[in-house]
Length: 462
Image (cartoon, rainbow, N blue to C red; front, side, top):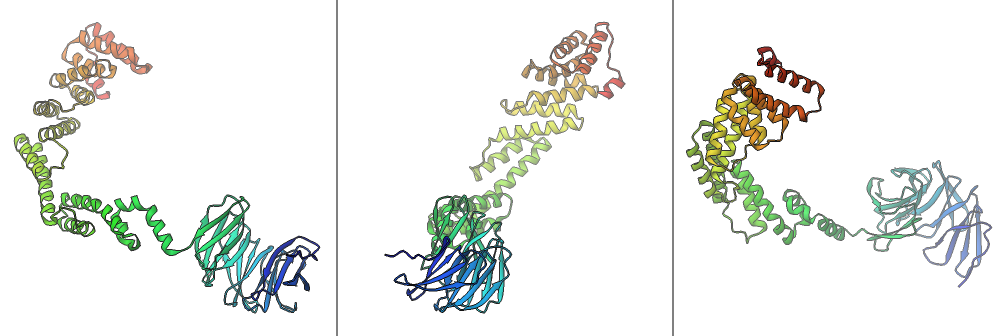
């Protein structure tokens, strides 16, 4: 339509008056020029001592604000008369904007701040939070939100009091400009990363998106869903109901029956199709848990038949329990045996392991379990009592030199010097520890000479 010529430097900003009849342009030649809609020059506003980066009309069209790298904002009337100069920034002022009601002015600066002023030029508030130059500032159409764009690659939203609301992070370089849509539901940001990003500020859309992002999380955290009323859609509550049931089951097993019942009721409320009797289920699970504890106590007391019976009863009440009664009792016996070893009760430990195997031949008693019993029993001069454990360990791990070493000690203490020599030599062949190797070689030398090297002092040191 028209090219407006007259500036002697780059033109950095342009703005229409609210009535659309006047255009204001800001230039690096330190001036602001006013033009009519036909492109005819009306007035040149002179007063800045540096490049003018931003220009804006007040909503009533009676005032013009200009922002300059002389660190000031100047207010002019429509005739071009300078009204006042806003001083306070310590860096270039890159952008200036009026609030929709015309009562507040926001200025964005290279000093990393945004300042709010009243229409007379009185400073109201300084917004701090950006770590780079603030290049652009804009008010939302309702005047309740301020958006700022910065060289720190972010856009920040603030309320009108200056409280930070949120930071929009997506750009990978300087953000130069920010603008609200007329309905205030969308923000557009322009960046040196060659993109414009549109951001959705509609609360309902944001809530829906947030709930959608949290979908899987909320399904397994119903306590959080309970606090987020906006996310409590029928589908979301139904998805979270199984977790409530699981939580209730755990509470019931821990004897928190009332809390368990409450969880089950909430699960039914969120998914009425669940087949669930809260009181009955809580009692069943609590009773099953009590039977398991009783069975565990009976294992400790040696009443294995009673323990297995308790475990069977528990399974009938709570079929989801993942164990076989005899296998569970046998596993507890193994744990008991391991504990008895460290109490130097070697005969009792061996009996526990043996009973466990008789109860469930498939129960796992590792080579390390047997070896620990073998070694510590031998050190306490009970080699004869633990020899079975020594042989079991070697049977399970015949190529383990350390386990052969333990049996070697037991054999030597029992007087089986040839067997001890064979075991120690197997260990010597495997170890890289020079001190241990030398020690075992000295034992072998003594044993070959018919001498028992394991004095009380040696056993104590071992």
